[in-house]
Image 1: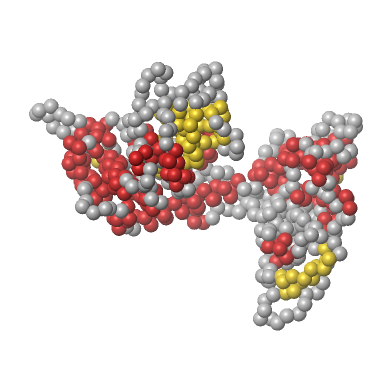
Image 2 (image 1 turned 90 degrees about the horizontal axis):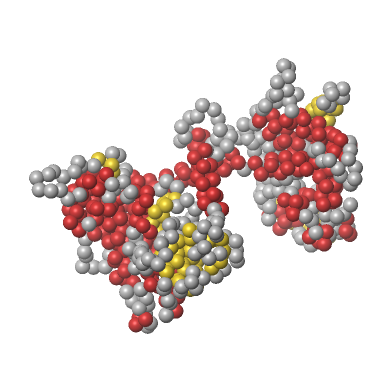
Length: 617
């Protein structure tokens, strides 16, 4: 009995039988389930819906055909008299197996029309439903000696990813724990709900949004607590839009009455901006659902994000350097990089992202006006997004500027550059005290002693008053080659995440196999037959389930081997001709079957369940 390690897995490449039943079009109602019967399928059957399972003809799938993988035309020919074979082939993902055999055919392909060797193309003829099609086969010729596995196996990690990660004691076949925990944390925040009895002041529905969940502490009732940025009391909620069932972030401006709708011109301009470092604005509306007039801004929701203020400026120790001392006392101890100050590479990473966001905003003719640590979100380790864009444009809209609401944008853009300089200086000092007017000379002295001259020159350029209009493009030469460093880091991060995704890409297919197998095994009764699960094809599947999960050693101890389970499931999915021995629980019967036999039993039985669920039996 073969026990093969499941450390490797690639897409299955199987050679289909052109004369198999799934390649022969059926006429009338027997070719596939009618639209009425498909619509009456239960939700359970839709979970397992697959093109290869939508017709009774799947009972005769050729050996080597996958049960669940539908990316290749080999797995789901979808032949109808209304479509030409050539466009159908182009609409599917190429499969290496198609280099050797036609991807789908209702009749064996005739001899190709001769052509000159230099053309590199073959004219194929194919008959489908009584109609003959001629098409050009652009499939590359097969490579001599190329052999593919006939079932799914796991490949090792790519070398360029394996060498950039620290070596572990044992190879991992699942995504990294750090990435898994981060994703789970985001999912928990996205799905979090509020007990309405605990917060009766929060309405259950606002406009087209429901399931509101506060993302920050709500301001006390009957108390004026204005935002230091906007000048109004604000609150923030996560909510689900009933139109698309997607989560959004709602920023509510308390007690604001919108008296001039001309500002919606600016809102429409903001809605058109899509950037990886900007939280996109989706809509702005007024409401009285909070028992008072309120203005609500709806943004994309980024679960797990925290502000730059909470990430970097909650530690009071760096502020000691800027704290005023009494006469005769010395200044605080000078902080050092990596011991109180942020690494310069991290600061440049932030500069690249923030300047990229400003460049997009200014190019669109708008101004950010919220370049502040409390309005910059950080997700993951270093990913930045500018939040609350467009709020100031609505709150401070001057009705006297009806003729040109963009008249002051140039002035606001200059203020954006100064705000960016203050953010970079605060990051370099790791303290907001450094951007206070009295502390700027001391802060620049700290930057000069701790960081490169390029960073110092960048801050000086952004904070200094110029006689001419400055542009965010002016700081690109100061960033210089550090832009390539950030691009390289982003691409390496993408390689690592893709490798983690590759470890999980086959999990859905294996889960569907196990779920289908679970619906068959140990079923107490089917069609009033209590022995259904213990007879016929179902008995073979029961023994195969024991072969998968209930192996024991020579001493009678449970034998637990994940590679054995995955390997056997992959062979079942592909229907390989390999033989296995299935032993009954009383050890009096030994059945020798092939995986292709088991696959046929599996398909027939599950189709029987699907038909009964749809009311056809």
